[in-house]
Length: 183
Length: 457
Image (cartoon, rainbow over all chains, first blue to last red; front, side, top):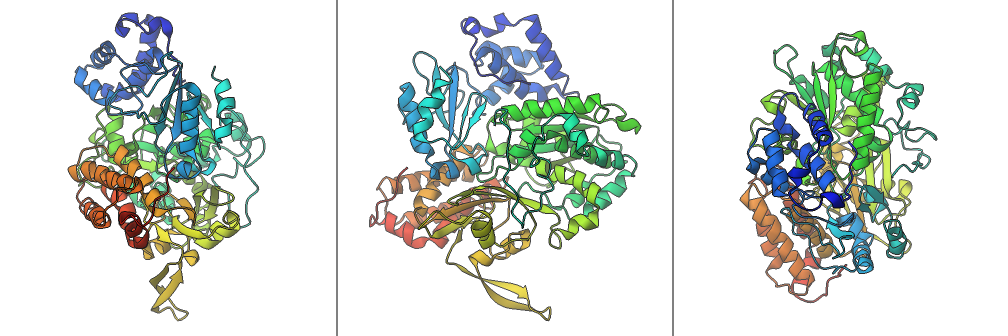
């Protein structure tokens, strides 16, 4: 159940499905066992597990998951491209998701996002287009920064989810201190 | 969050903490030992000595309404499930909290997961359900582990799993994570998502998953807070619980206040205990110095906006019990389901968003329009295209490219979405545009005609 977004450098090249280990398969079996009525229900958790392990889901991953669940690749592909969380290409080691929606915007999240982008060297106006693409990422692969919709923490706006950690009441001045922790 | 201890401020005298009672105690943590030391799972012990139908009757008598947004009576929903229909039943907890302005479930999941697990075990027993899923949005990664650990701890103590508390009843609970889509908060979309399909909301009828739900079997979908209330209703008794609220809207309701107030946060209040004015000025400390109240969205971003200087004409009972016409100011509107409905908006998910006179309404609406344009699932044409058009028009207005026809065009697009889609997202995305245009026409006209430069981020 632990969720990590770190990219495993050893696994980041070549076909991902060739790097599946018995331990990995045992984890997959455990996840599938949570869905005794229909294996297909394990689609989302398997994509999550795959992306957490490999950093993204390549075509071999889509095919592997589909085969494991007795589905066709399109059944997995249409999920990977629908949900904003999933991607078919690598993202940064640290993913900064700044909340864009009303309470955070009123509290200055646009300025906070610009500051994050400036600090890591990304264009603040570059958008994340979804459909399985990775959010804007620095060339060295260390950081991705994107706007996301409401993170459900409007009382402590503005907020950002950095990897698995929620940062609240972020002032633009605090951005460099926050980034120190992810060097 | 992230392991930091959570300190809740002392309760306001109007607050009545039931759901947040334990969370507000110093030193309360998510371990089962702490939970048991605070009377945890006592309601479940009581439940398994009762007949399931008795529990459903207690929930009906408590007047508990769903806390997710639609406000459907919980007991009635459970009543749709026939105990002896020979079919498997499922309960799915909607922990996909994503309505802008709403942030109560986040704290329950992170700081008192056992409350949810206990409420869920009772709910399962009451509806003869042996398999439950808690659908948590993946933007709460810590919550997913915390809740999963709580389920495992409860299993080790015999509260979850086979033959719970030697009652002969089995229940399994699993955590299922979403993947960043707002639409999955819509209950039939959530079920499609849980079935592993592309999460397009289902065509209605049937209107209730209790008829055809998960795997096309009778299913209860309830919000996190709703399921937590179940445990407290058994503890306090239906009468005592119902007394806290208004007729037809029992118990406490957590109001989440955000935006331009001194003390934003969530406040657990008996339903109907305060007016909007008391909530903003007494409980949340009022506005920032020198600012005036301009607008309030009272029930999550999809609820219709209210204008601060508005006077509503409503029907109310006079001292002799007769219905008479009455005028009421916005700040005097009582924060319960019926009162907010009577002034043309809704209590929804309890997300109160406050805007002061520094906010321009075209900018606010554009922010919400972008939200809906990004989150439309794309199944129905009016919503998929219309939400994007509305967002493009308000964006263009903000960029100085407004034309005098824009307000009319916006209204026309919104009017052609509501009522023409498979799910309530159509209403959710058109109500902001319709209500902002109706309440603040002068601002939209000024920006549209180029007489005013709109604010940018």
